[in-house]
Length: 387
Image (cartoon, rainbow, N blue to C red; front, side, top):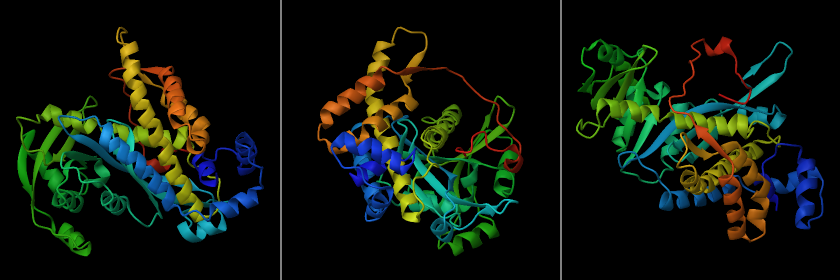
């Protein structure tokens, strides 16, 4: 019951959650202090392990593909933490405002199946560990997928990262930033829009590779330039060399599918309100982070089945429809403890399936928003719970 309560997520006070949940299951209401003592007897690895059960189910039964490939996107973000003494000691203090209020942050990274909205690995760490390091550590937990393609944004567009991915036999598509990369600058100056070349690392890249214990021989890459509606040229680096299978338009479409991981972070932070933690100790942060990933993936699994019914029911409409993710999350969270403790799994799944199938939203093709190009230090966050 303690683990199920954590998986139910803390969006209100601990005492309120206990007073609401325990009587429904014939359990005596306990104090918040008693619950807190009990929760820290559970290792956070337990919550990672049960998510592994969902990952196995997804891998074996439900995977959409693009040209026969499973599509993964890697990306990172930051998470605000409660500034308790224990969390300050473990995660450190990121900043303090003029009133002396400390701000604690953690770094998170996803490897996300963008076609199925499924988190394959989610990691949270101290800020001192960079996104690239956390991504590489997360990849070690990934199952072998020779037909998988990993899509990354400009934050990962450097020689060391791409070399390491290719050495690990990953198919990749990475956007490059022209700033700070001589290779990217020379590629942009090349008149060709799509060509295969050899990326010879700079002395700085060689030194970085040596520090990380990596190898720094040149790599064969395909360079593809995509003209965006804004007039900006998108520079993509891949090892998808066969132009008969992957046209330049295909490469552009492939990279655009990376946006799914951004939607994943939007689900995790503003919709699920991850940053409303119900704990004041580091171990609780790890517990609740992985509990959120479990809930996200459970929504995805049931939602993917519901989508099949929704598409049949709405086949005659002008727009395409899918399940409403936020409502689906509410349905799952409402029934999650019963799902985990009462043993009527089939009956509850059927109930969730019916609820999710009945709540739909339309997909508007070609919908776009202007990108905010101001510096992150001045534009602020539209919501404090998003990237």
